[in-house]
Length: 260
Image 1 (cartoon, rainbow, N blue to C red):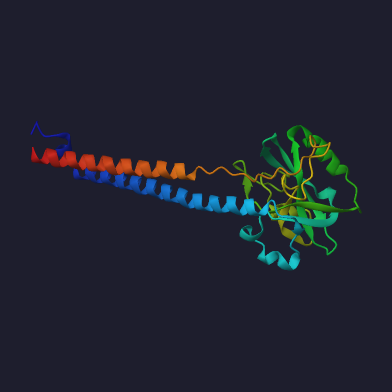
Image 2: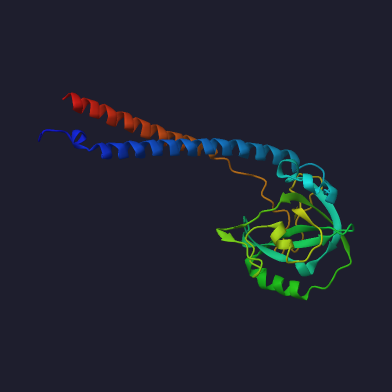
């Protein structure tokens, strides 16, 4: 009895628990690997879709009868133009983290002639400009000047970001949630999407940043995306293989101990 191996001395419960943990780890790692494969397919589709669209000549933005058919697959990152009057009083600032540092997206609705409104991301402003922007918004006067905006169509970003939720009551925005932003504004017919003002270099409608780019910089839409999902998938599948290999070694050891 004293010479019994540790494997022989384990209770059936301990063996069952060990088997359960091994199976759970294997299935978990396999699921994570498969999820990364699916994410890779989605990312490749996104990269191809964006590359095909962002350099196309701008077209008129979808009008209200088309809004129910607007979706990311068909419209996101499409260069568009729209005309209207700025509703500067309703401008909100949404938290942003860009290649230029931390700051805010300046989101202003554009009133169109047909009575609808489109939320426009007019560009990035640095953190230090927040107080100045809030002052300008509070003092803004109604405008009657019709402007033409060219930019990329974007889909609403509900919920929040930076691990924080949007809070309309305090004006704290961490994502560009069109519905949540436009409801407190009292807009009668807001579009379900927003527009990032400005188009990337290479687009026929591209214009270089103006003299006030340090205060408000349009055209900062991210159109290049990293794709490391294959590496992640191989990592998870490798861990699953290691668990399977460890299980085989343990089983082999048990069999050898039982024969001794």
